[in-house]
View 1 (spheres, rainbow, N blue to C red):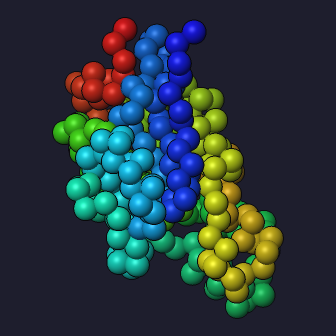
View 2 (view 1 turned 30 degrees about the horizontal axis):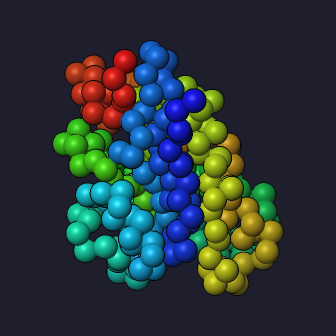
View 3 (view 1 turned 90 degrees about the horizontal axis):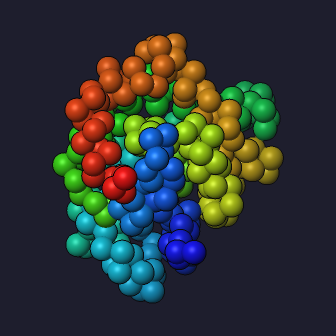
Length: 248
């Protein structure tokens, strides 16, 4: 049996750093290994982490963090070209509003998370469109990330995998791998109740479903969204497959 490359890299200064390669598509091909990665932010990498990441040959990072997030923790590897695709964070502010009003609960936090995913589609499609334009320009090997590498990054990677022809159940399994590999920042949101911090520190299938429901409502489905919202026609999808899928 051929050796299967490692999917997850156990970095000390970053968590949830993993390869999107190896997933099968509906037409008998697989996503190329060592081309597309996802992670949380790269601002706290150790020297050992940097050596691992450099060995992967990463050329570019696509960063969905907002302005203040980027300033607080810039990428720690100078030779990686960083492309900012900002989606400003809204969840913590919404949680604190609910907390001040005495309405905050774990279920309320989950609904705030779902609404944030809907808003990625309603208000931030331009950032995803720009990501795909860069993917077509071929910056691989590359990493897609935000601060936690689970929500903005999670939806972006789901869209990429769908565009490449990966099945929905496989995409969901990859999305939920975050709950195995993401290490929550113990200093974040310490003013929030523990059950709320737990709710927002994981991913849930209902989060991704909320984004897909918004796509269905506004565009009629994922393929229409990729075509009309992202600008991927048949030629562009064929080009993506040529770059990021293994040969048949």
